[in-house]
Image (tube, rainbow, N blue to C red):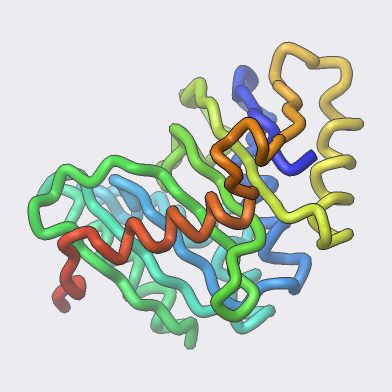
Length: 209
């Protein structure tokens, strides 16, 4: 299979959050690339921490996953982005935070890597804010594309279990059979590698202290 689109329509069911965290919790990967225009961590004096949502930080720490982040959309999200990085680093998590020099970063990308090999990815609309990553009101209606390598049983099981769970809400999922022959000869792995390589060509700098 290798490709599924999940549509978020309910407050209490967040496939982006669930599969992002659960993919890391398989223990398959040791590196994560996370791109978001917004990292909501004490935004404008608020108490919400996206870094602790769904035990995101705990799973990173448990599996000793190194995190590389890319952001943000505009200067008012700079301080929350720093808070996000600092709160994770203070727990002993290795974080390399990158900043778009022109701001206006809006792409939402998550890639789990086994060493340098990408094995699971999410591309879509969901970002690292309470409305998109949380399960409280208000929530965002979102659409996210999930791609993974079939050779990893744990990832196949993760998606299969989610599809069983969502059967009664069939309007929330689109299942696709990815055919490289219909996609310029590019495999799912090729696509994920292209995403990583494209990000390396973007004008980024280290997030300042």
